[in-house]
Image (cartoon, rainbow, N blue to C red; front, side, top):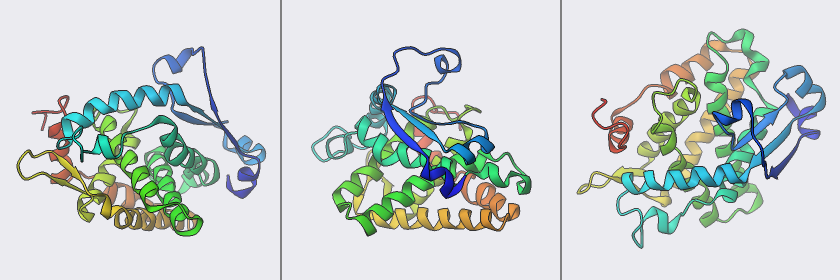
Length: 261
């Protein structure tokens, strides 16, 4: 929807006492409305964040983290150093993700795409959050420890998508987490502990991971500008979606995925 929509876009954190319809099946942590491209382009986007739903997700994810990360609750474990917190995740992750949908949505170029736009739109919105973190650090003084915490929260949150790996509705989000965990392994941000076989997070690799995420984000935007459906398809199907040995190893650590191959 571009800069015109961005100029009239607003966001807020809300308490939502009643939910009906589809929200009873899947509650959003954040959502952009309206969904009609022509309306959002003319009138901008309204974004709401549900702190209660986000907090509930954090609690569910903590149980997964304890099972998958080496000594997660120990004094130097990820839950001690980077304990997930709902409002922090809304500010540094969900907000940029939803604004990403508002200003540069793949639906605007879907005529050139040989695949459903949502398959790459959700990963692209996740990359918006990663690119924004990098900009906040480099251009606006976000301290390195805060940056490290934000990426750690983002990384840890990926486990809940892997825990629902067979969900067709969550597939676009899962595709991004496959890609993200490959980047984490490539940069050494995540490794497998030699004794326990569980995950170890090295926050000193934060910048290296964000550099790769940002480069991919810019390539996607370039492909959109050129309406190059072939290059965008390659990013999705060749770079993001395929599993590798590291991703398969992570999946095997989750109780819901053990022995599924």
